[in-house]
Length: 124
Image (tube, rainbow, N blue to C red):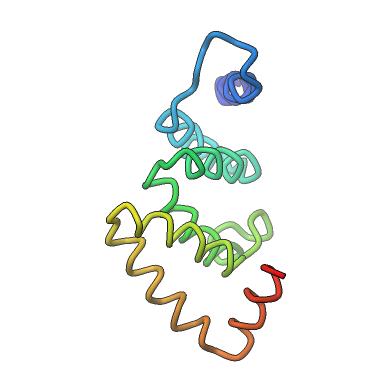
């Protein structure tokens, strides 16, 4: 219940029609609560919002979650190596060693024939 209220507050703040602003750190914390509640759709939405606002830990977590998706969360979160690379790159740009390591692994995977084609096709 508390998570639903908090998520509703975050959504309202996104619309910019309220005086209460939700910080990227608060969005990240709400994402962790959603993860604990197994509400993976909310978790991903909140992580993406926090990551887009420059929250480094959210970017790092997105890199992991989008790589391991089904292994960690079943069918609740599909794997997306290309989006994982985007978030790892964003974290690495902020000096994140986790992001740099993820990016290194993803770049190695990207050199596999299917990896490069898949990410390049998404950009087109």
